[in-house]
Image (cartoon, rainbow, N blue to C red; front, side, top):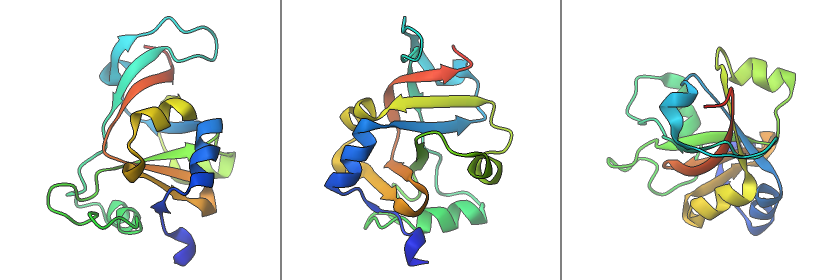
Amino acid sequence: MGLLLVTPATAAERAAIEAGEAWHFSKASPRQLTEAKLAGGPGQPNARIRLSAPSGWQLDFWKFIRDASVWDPAAFSPADRGRYLYLFLGEPGTWTRRMNVQKAPLTVRIPGALLLAAVPPANLFYRAVDKVVVVKGDYVGPALLDPPP
């Protein structure tokens, strides 16, 4: 269980995130996330988005277990309980997609440097065992959406 613990991102983990790209898969449509279209070239952000963390007050056993693994003193506060976004650091492999991403037609890719610029350090966590970046709260900023907005 200790290997599945999500801990505050260390300096080395933040450097890896900054140099990489965070991937998120969503059941939302591009229109639901997009605040503005961007004229990015190939491989560049094509939208400014709001990726909202779901409420932790859900009757979803697996979400509760996943959120309970975040080493955050405020994890169970009434105001913020479970408001976490989960992103992969880099493109996940086939097995990871099959196990974690089911029927999520929208791929969201966020350059790591832009993610770090938008998220306060206290709201950034990391799970080393499977290279998962966890953000407490929402992400608002540029992203590459596939399909595009």
